[in-house]
Amino acid sequence: MSAALLAAVAGAVLYGSGTVLQALAARRASGPHVLRHPWYVAGLGCDLLGWLASLVALRALPLFTVQALLAGSLVVTVLLARVVLDAPLRRIDGVAVLVVVGALVVLARAAGAESPVRALPDGFTATVLAGLGLLVVVSVACYRRGPGWLFALLASLAAASAAICARAVTLPPDAGTGELVRALAVEPLAWAVAVSGLLMTVAYARSLERAGVGATAAVMAVVEVVVPAAVGLMVLHDTVRPGWPVAAVVASVLALAACVALAASPATTATGHVPVEPAARQSV
Figure 1 (cartoon, rainbow, N blue to C red):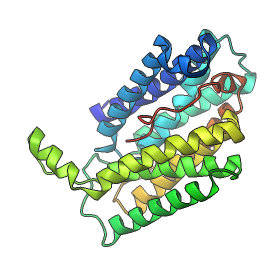
Figure 2: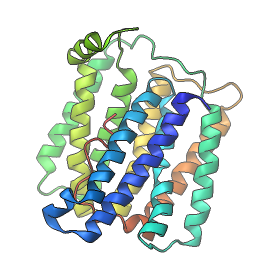
Figure 3: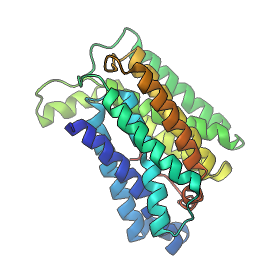
Figure 4: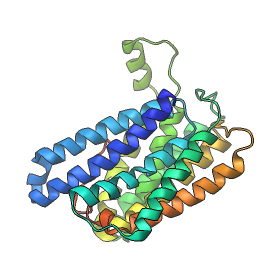
């Protein structure tokens, strides 16, 4: 297994673990005290490490592979919630876990050769920044009275934007630390990653308030896989291994359907008391 693939799997495990740790803290503290609880801080640490792992994966693997593997963090969340939070596990949850794992193995196998992003199409950066600006405007305009489903959609589109921008950022080859920092400081897509992460955090928290954890997780599981995958394949030159396109499509559909089922699981709902999703989460 390649280092990038291992990084994506590690990111999924860390994200799922972070969610459960934060939920555990929410059960042992209330209000602002949750944010200072050791379990919550540990969960933040898991999210940060998961973010770093996803960065490594996105630099080499197709977006559809990385995003699908990260969506598989729902499997980790459900299984850990059963053990740590004593959350009930339905029969359909067990089936969904097996389906997700099997589908992700197929998607990992279907990924084309690992390679950095080639030259971006004309107007790509401007289009991405304009789209992100639109998301910000809609979020601000609808923040007070917008429905939960809208904020779930905004959060998932912001997460998709973060992944796309992280994949598209062009870094100078063999650059030292100082040169790398300077390059990132003047790279619009790098700033877009940060803005997307902040927007995702705010919209996610609002969605949890108005739509609940199950509905929010279901929308995010679908959108933050489908949108980056489409952009990666059509614009960023991501490839599927010859002979595997049909298998990749079928595996993607099955994985998304199973993730939606897991999003409705009592085990997922049991983690829904976390007040705010950390900014590191998905801000890749």
